[in-house]
Image (cartoon, rainbow over the protein chains, first blue to last red):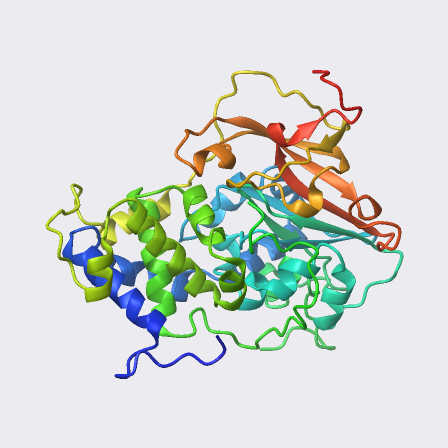
Length: 208
Length: 225
């Protein structure tokens, strides 16, 4: 589990051997080209990731009309970004408010908004998170350094159908006048899952 | 099925341990395992619900001890064997022996790009109106199918409220077993934390699932419809 062998060395782990065997057999039988597998991997390694979601959140913070479109029909609203990668079938944007904080989990597998956040991190797919998020979300959040007031309502969304959820966190204070591009730098992956908040702006403004 | 995948509410797994600067794939085989699963989906060798059922059919001790892409590749192997796309002899010799080949053009990079450009849509036209409306109180059924379901154990036999009518969607419980898409209305059902977990539950907690109509009944029981 924790220590995988580097499967480019001669001593392959059992699972690496099995994966290689399946690739060889399916290629020899004419199901798939190696280049197709390379293209899938390259898309997820280089073209999609949480920066897509961060752009969506930043636009929702700065453009009221877009925010309304996003909350009404996120699947349609995000098409204007032209993101690559396999499309999320039905996307739903969840708006955090001063009184409600949203947290997303998939207890049964690993449903996740790939188009906007890329592939989920290992912890999102693992038993500790999937088991505890629905019964004790505050302890989950505290492990990510997030403690919310006891009066904040916590809403957990267990993604059991082909709906993919993205949290729209509250815009950080002290970002008045920031551009969409600047704001996107504050939006973390964890804040779009609900286990974190956006980064706090550096006093004195945006600095790169 | 009540398998190792149905984790909501289980205890004792320890801390979550997020990894900083986590790579997309931790080793080459993870990327290949992911890509092979994705390719099988694009080729239509089996549907998404079949892949989920295959993974959750692993014995719980295996499911809980394998890394996630190991679960994926185990599920893929099981399906490829079940559908006679590969044989055990081929798997153990790591090469194609059986002369049977794909009767489709191989998946190439162009078709991957095409597939990624399309949105997979699980909505279907409805043959009956939705039985429930926003605001209705419903009870999830007590059910323990040995087959695939998306109603987690922690949310069975619980009172909740219809928060949204999502639409008429492919029904996983049927689609996973090659019994057709059997489209059914799907709803967002929200539960109070205390309803799910009892009096000790966090009073600020609500949890929602997406539930298909066959998972739901009117709270009074009886056969009203």
